Length: 335
Image (cartoon, rainbow, N blue to C red; front, side, top):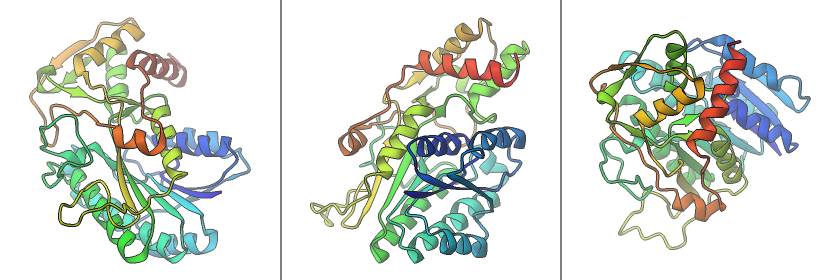
């Protein structure tokens, strides 16, 4: 197939492109290579993809309506994996306009491109952040998500609503994937694995929020990519049993679906730090802090819907994932 992947130089995007190229797909990669974090890391990821003759890269802002329309009309992808976004919960407190621009206006351009070129399936990144203030665990796609606690989460919920509208009005199959704390080789330097690793090896303090009383459903990158590709290959369909008198947020009477992509086994933050300490053979110096605005104390994914849909759910043990991450970190940063 010919597949458009936005955010191709990103953490998940690069791994996704590699998987698609390995199986013989033609990949059209889009990224603006912005400086939200180290551009050199993005360029290093991209360098892994460019030698493949089936990969074509386009440096474009997804917010650029004309450029995106031209790309869709000339390349005419069969399916789209939309991963480009302004990420980060805390940064949304500082630069809210960046989130509306990339995550709402940018997504609008993706939807329009899919609509006008008859794309067969749009798979897009949502986030576990949409569960907001929910306290019922594990988080289920059937749960109400009307209480986001960060603008980032609000934009991701907006994406799901916008996708539903296009599935309803234009019969566009859309599937949203709610990712839970993705980690692994080539990860983002603004996330805890690299922040912790860097500080630990420099013998500096690592910041641990909510005094360590936090847990996350850490999900290894290879599992995430496996989920994305399997979902891509199975376009969303109408739920023929949908009951409009008792609406279910997970499905619809139109070709629309949302799935959790998580390990289904939340890990205490201190246990995660402990796994890094073992892998690096370094004891972390810990700086305990209060909960940060926009954060939640715990995430925990119910992945039964995903498993039923594609016959797969993430399961890589934390120790294995952390070991692989540390091996990459030492190699990439020459430690």
